[in-house]
Image (cartoon, rainbow, N blue to C red; front, side, top):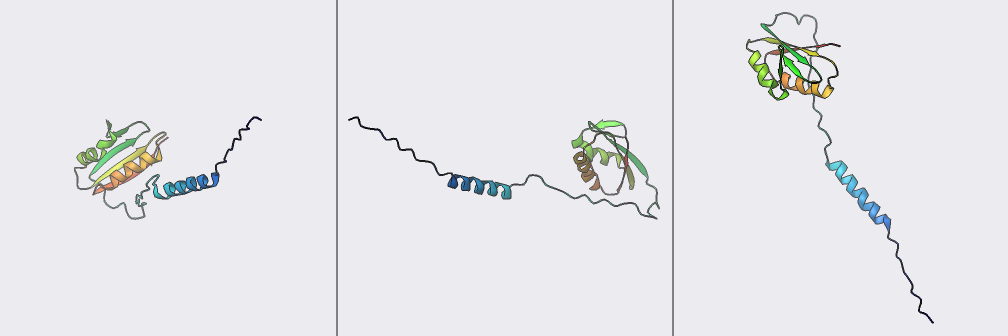
Length: 128
């Protein structure tokens, strides 16, 4: 008689594997930060706020590709120092024009830079 070879195959239990994967997924979802949200305080103009006129007007044009300050193209990293160089007067007004397909993230990044400059009034206009 020929000896029969019995192949015993054990089925792997997937329940414990699924439990481990679920726990890892839960751990990484709860411990990760996907993006950080920041608030930028903006104040709307109210009646009677147009009392004093600014000493100096700075023009900032925000495009999808570039940022121009008083007609000259500047790098995003140099925006704070470039505005400080233009902001020589005690009270200055920055007129910001948003043009084209500018992303809202770029807009918020620039506003967060500009809000930190003391004595600078920020006015935003939208162009098509």
